[in-house]
Amino acid sequence: MRKLLLTLLVLFITYVIYYDLSAGVLSKPTSIVLLQNKESKQSENATAKELTVEKANEQEQKSVNTGKEEELYYQEVKVAAGQTVLSIVEQIQDGPLPVSISQLITDFQLLNPKTEPEMIQIGKVYKFPVYTDKE
Image (cartoon, rainbow, N blue to C red; front, side, top):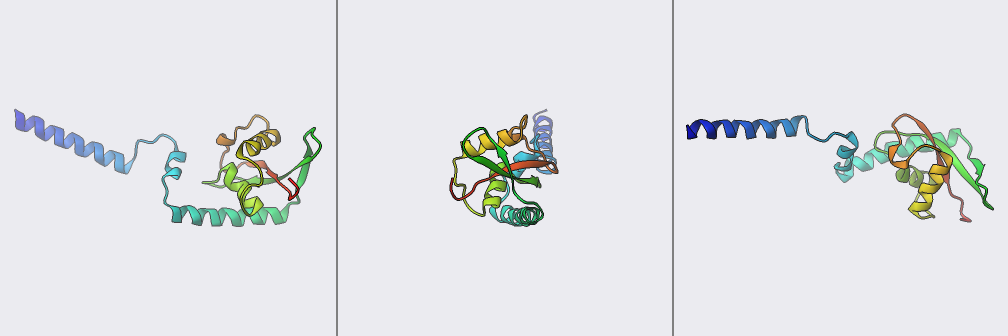
């Protein structure tokens, strides 16, 4: 009886490991993106940056009056797989952000009402803030 139970237990554990490695148990594909190695992430960013640069060449920057003293410039970008609000704005800026991340989130929500920065969807076009040198 012990041999039968031990055999069934080993088979069950083997099946669980096989299922976890083949199909996985993570429910959101975004969780998988976070686990990628640095090299594949850089190649995706290079492709995304090329798309962003092409988009920037096609469109001029637009501005929105925020009710403050300065206007907020923005650029419309179609989101690709693996991109985040932070990565897209860094690509537009071609470097680090000149403002804090909380300010970036506030500006993104101002430009895209009813859209949370964490909930952007692949293939949709969103307005991303463009910061000038004087900010």
